[in-house]
Length: 345
Image (cartoon, rainbow, N blue to C red; front, side):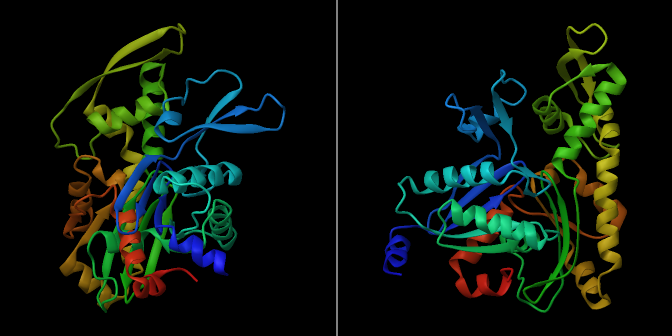
């Protein structure tokens, strides 16, 4: 008990947005201190005792698609939930120690953001990973709730707020009122599915294979959701599937929009289905207040225009969609009363 108190006195509490694509860490009293890809590189241990972690974050992401035999670059979070328990624990330990810049006496209280579709088994996996990585106490908070707090919405009021969080692995749509989620839907479709759609389109149209990182660069540079957007072009390099040699093509934003039709439609459909299940009083509030967009995927050019046309509702985008979830969890960490109200039991 005394050791727990001592460890707590020497640690800063953390809020972690453990995302499929990126992990962001917020330290109480300091703000956002770390934003790195959720990628871990592991190598076979020469002694034959399994694998050892050799890189985490940006350094590991650079290795994706470029590793020799014996080294793997892994994403331990798939579709918003833990796919590899041990690697996730190693990644969490790295981020906790990096946030503190100290050794093992550190035992912080940690708030972790999870998707609303998470099962009780997956909740336990997240909680145990954090405890094994050195947490003193673990609170779980649903991503749409954290995103709403981070976007500056009053989640404790008796009014409806709708949030659409487009992350790497999942898109979460939720209606929030009185510190709780009234109705929500979550689909395993986000930034990663958009990248996948681009890879498949280039393969189908040009007989060329591009990697995950190239697809992500294409999406960020010339990706667009609306047909009225100005056409832009980009040089894309990959491997010719017929000749087997490197190849260069010029892709246009119109082609990428065509490639992204399916994932965009899936997200819009999820918003429609959530609105259909929203109680009428809260639906009236949404007409007045609009829909708040957060998450890295919402930065796709003109996506807000497409959603506005489809729903006929006002669409707002958070000031910093990429960090809204972790900032919301950070605000809850600073206000213990709010944290107890919004955390999952």
